[in-house]
Image 1 (tube, rainbow, N blue to C red):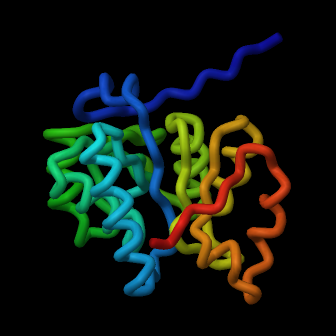
Image 2 (image 1 turned 135 degrees about the horizontal axis):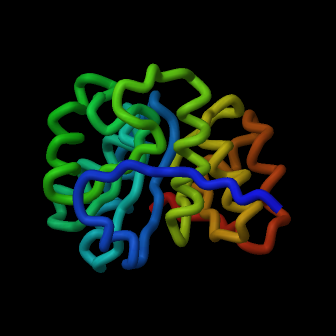
Length: 188
C-alpha cells in the first residue's frame, strides 16, 4: 500500500505539541459574548499549563490566541497560508510573536498561493494535533465544522458551547450530539 506523507512547516517550539493541547475555534464574526468566552477559556487553560491552539483567523481564533499569550501561557497557531504570509494582515504582529515565542504551523510551503480550500485543511490538521477542540461560536456554514467532523472521525474530544448546542436556529449541532466524545461546554 502506498503511504501518503504530508509535510508541515513550523516556526517556534515543536515541543509544545508534546504537552496537553486544546483548540479553541469558532466564527470570524464573533459576538461580544463569544469573544469573551474565547478569551476566558484560553486564559483558564493557559493558567493551568495547557497549550492553546487556534487558527489565527479573525474573531474567536484571535481572541483565544491573544488571551493565551496575555495570560503567560503557550500557544500554537495553525494557519491556512505559508508561515511567511500573514492572513488576515492585522494579525501579522501576533503571528510574528507566536513564531518567535510559541509555535506557528502551516501545511503550505513558502510562496504557495492561498486558496479557500486551505482553511478546511488547516482545521483538519488542528483536530489531529490537539487532544480536545472547543467550539465557541459557529454558524451552519462555518469552516469550524470541518474540525468538528475530523474530531469525530479521529475519536478526539469535541466540546461545543451550550449557547451553540441550544440555539434552535442552528442545524449542525444535532449532527454531533450523539457521538460519545462530544460534550456541551458551559457558557459561564
